[in-house]
Length: 293
Image 1 (cartoon, helix red, strand yellow):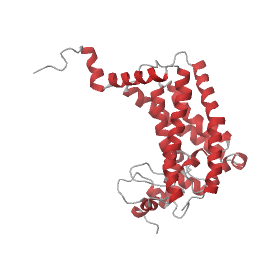
Image 2 (cartoon, helix red, strand yellow):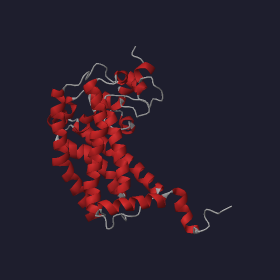
Image 3 (cartoon, helix red, strand yellow):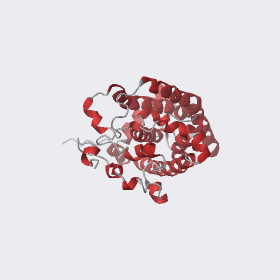
Image 4 (cartoon, helix red, strand yellow):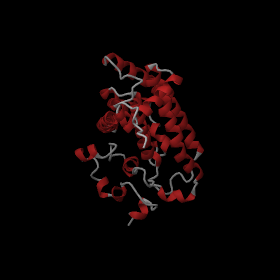
């Protein structure tokens, strides 16, 4: 029998087993094409990646609202009867606002956040060396925790009198949200409550851009699903944030942890939506599993 590791050093075995060498080679081949300027990778490439995910994934949900197709998906609506179909006249100003937020406010925020990080941190991660799985998972866990905390307090602050009336009310023009409404907000809210809480975790951990890219996938999926108006099988539940859009004064956080800590989901926990607030692993809708009385 031929020994497949006959010409492999002992030190190289861990890389072969966990595949890090393979992925590192692919990552470096990618950098050979796009370049390895950290400014370009952290600011411009990650911006295109993030907003691309937003428009493509969110577009699938919006298409279903515009066309009401496929018909069998209607049973997964959180608020049946809303946006059936979605009106173009309502969608156009939303798209205009979101594009303005992304270009006029989002790109500069990413640029200045990155350069502020460079001033504070002496050394960024080595661009051509991928982080280990353990480091990626560690960073993502910290990012999730920091996102929940910072978003909860910034969001709850935006619900106070003056700030709600003049800033946050714009986002709540959609009591039955659609996916692209996730970035439909006043510019101040977009920067302070939408973007910065997402950046806190990677900044604290000084994360590699690949880790940040994975983190942004998680953020986009969670945010778009939360605002989609649908509670689909396998995907996470959108019931909690949808209820927030419906009632305004409950469920300020992302995952419910800080709402439970502060008692700001007490009313939600008494509602049918709370029973539906779980991941579904069947083709039945949440309303079929937990029907209205």
